[in-house]
Image (cartoon, rainbow, N blue to C red; front, side, top):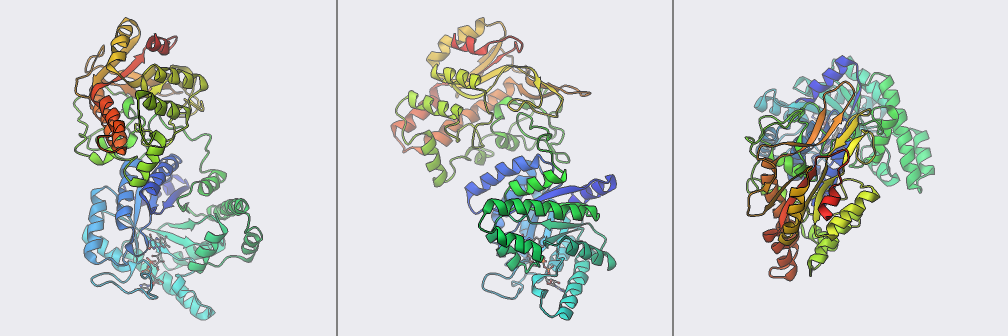
Length: 600
Ligand code: FAD
């Protein structure tokens, strides 16, 4: 969806808004960390997020990849920056085609800075010399498909900032006249360069309006986070910093915490002035960090972190995206939401309200999208990190159990069955104890939820959804266990009147007391004036798909850490080949005691 349409709706409704900008990290690990942050920050409800294009096109592939994932995986409306530096037309065309295919329909069209070592911008052979040409090109080749945003400079472009006041005025108005050309050629939105004097921005908007620029103009807000960063950026952009701000920052420059807090106070003050003056929204340059941007927005009243609906047990569902109405998922992927998104990407519709019979919907197979199987240990550095977490060698099943126990206790953050680092839930001490008992009894637990009988939706550990609701859940445990353990467990499960279960080896079909098209609601919430929300279910048809993925992780994440033929690798492989994946639900969510059934 074009961002301008969302903005126009906000304007019509008289609502202000905010957006977040990120830049592409240099390492693969940095990219994954950015996505963790993005996941969280998306829940605050930015109207869009954008990702920059590295200087000189240096990050083209990473930027394209991040933009695609932001749009399709984080499900936030995404804008990708694109510059002309070092980009002949064919490269621009291929980048635009790629994001078009990925459903990213918003571009910030820029000229870019001269490549390193050059003072003046010169068009690369077969390329463009200014953003205006790029805007015209996008409109000519892609019609109205892309929402186009362009850059504005409240203090004039740095190249035009000179000491001579007369020349400075000329350059300033020259820039505005040129900005009008960019808008007339197809620019629908303007985002500005950073500034630290709100009055400068307010005057710039007035001046733009005086020449007939009518599109929304968003102020680029860069909170001061460190003294060094502030000096570097204001020097590079030739930003005029009001004397009182400069003085205040200089006085605390050796105290990082004080600088950060000052930056937050200043950001709040500036944004308040801008919003009071009629600015429709603020664009936060996050520098990939959360604290300052979120603190400013929270103090402005855009975000109330204590009232933000807590994530559903699996992932937020932002408005205005293809999955906007999705509200039910099988529990199996609750710690691998990205894999789930990938495997269900092609579905024509997503379950809303009820799972019903989805057995006709096909998950993409592991070989269709093998990349989602290799996330945690995809580089040598990450393999090393995983070896530190899971052991540089494994001698016995006890070593394997020890890793599961450490994960439950929060002593290791990486876990083969979770895409995100760190435990997914902060378990209560009583629940940690139960999980440790299960692991020590030979059940290698990879997913679980406790029995919940009407706890408040705001509960800090197990709550989800809007405030004021009551949350229910059937106790659920999913684990790997040896064939011997299964032989003694199965009769106990069969004898327990309130228990449903499924189990399968890697090569076998699921067995258990649920029929293929049964659906068990695992968690549900009752909210005032609403239908019941049922975000996780257990469904045998999905289990048949999930178990292949769960078993594969023994090989692709864990066994792959060790040398071919080593005892450690053989141990992981033998668990993969011979053990069972079991999931058990206690349907008695009022009085059930699933641990008792499992432990006998
Ligand atoms: P243009 O709009 O082409 O203008 C550049 C200057 O040239 C202006 O002073 C303009 O007045 C003048 N000019 C150009 N053509 C004409 C003409 N025909 N007639 C008159 N004047 C003309 N850089 C990156 O490398 N990656 C990014 O992701 C990135 N994101 C940015 C986001 C924002 C919001 C902003 C404000 C800047 C960003 N930049 C980024 C920096 C930007 O690339 C540089 O400031 C660059 O020097 C100018 O780009 P532009 O698109 O503003 O250029």
